[in-house]
Picture 1 (cartoon, helix red, strand yellow):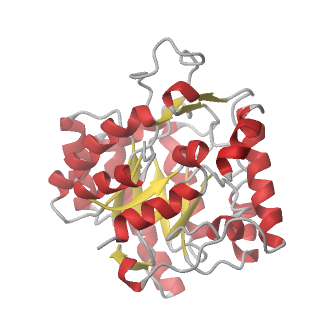
Picture 2: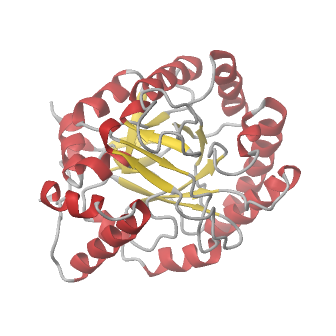
Length: 338
């Protein structure tokens, strides 16, 4: 069905098509129509971060920034859903157009810039959703917050989403917020993770539950940077690393329309690089911290590869743009087949 609809969606500007698709899924879900998948077999379940995931295929952050479409997206068969990135205050993000398809490469470039309605609105949306599965909330910093005050924004978001999140992801790797990736460096990362884990201990005492913390990293890291980040994740007992975000490189898209646009590249051109980064993190962490693989998963075979090199779970985003909802079931089948 999606193959028939996709040409119509691709005739629309990319961000317009994105909003239209999500709205259509929500409308169909409310009518009891549209794609729907039953629960995966018990053999598909995975235990990661102390959480039981009904299957290992999740939705990556970015598709539903405000948690407005959780119930509709849950019908697609995901084992978990991650919403956000959310910031303490609402912000419009970068000027449009800011999302571009590169169909010849099965890729997307975006420079959205953490556009969202703010953390209070996201919490309201999560509370009003009927979904009771595994829900991650991805948190970030406002664009006008100085880097030296970034920890305050992450702490604000952590406090507010803590009661409603199954796990929380610390996004320090988007290329579309100025200087954000500097938080991946040793001293900055050490200080940020120390603050967040201390706050998590306090929140666990108040709420009577320990919410796992994950850190989302960039694909544009060398071996020394990966080793340094892995050491910090171990030191602060972070519960998972999500590898990876989008890339600023343009390998595989040079000369294509829109390839010159600023922003993060995702999709098929990222497949090999994210696989390499997942492998390096898995080796550096040696089982101490699980890896969640995301980036360039365009088929069930791609999902299997991520697991084979060390990922415990996988997440999808750009593959859904090109393959539609069937990609979810294909990946679940690929990872759950005996």
